[in-house]
Amino acid sequence: MNDVNDNKAMQRYELNVDGSVAFANYRLSPGVVTITHTETPAALRGRGIASLLVKGTLEKIRADGLKVVAGCGFVVDYLSKHPEFSDLVA
Image 1 (cartoon, rainbow, N blue to C red):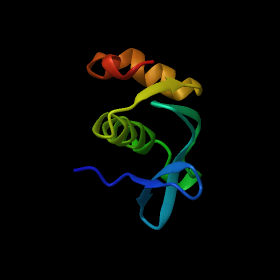
Image 2: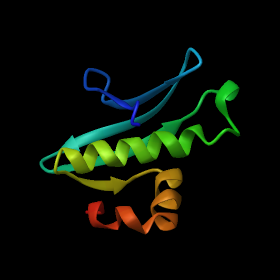
Image 3: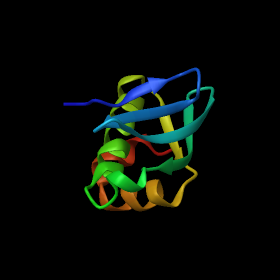
Image 4: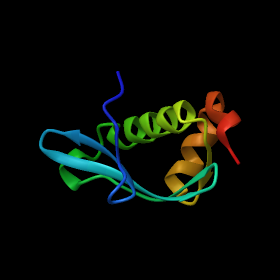
């Protein structure tokens, strides 16, 4: 199940949980999505929400046939722990 939505107007991927929104800001270049910042509201922290957000974001990027550049430490760390997404790294 992937509940992550691409809010193109705000250039961010969003995951709504319990009335709060965790998000990953991005910049789009030809063929590449650069994730610049991820943020999880305090009420959602410690529940693995940020990992769900990044996983869903990477799945959307893959489905769109794009590559990813990790411009945020959390995404760098996630990618190092999840080699199944290594094909997406630009």
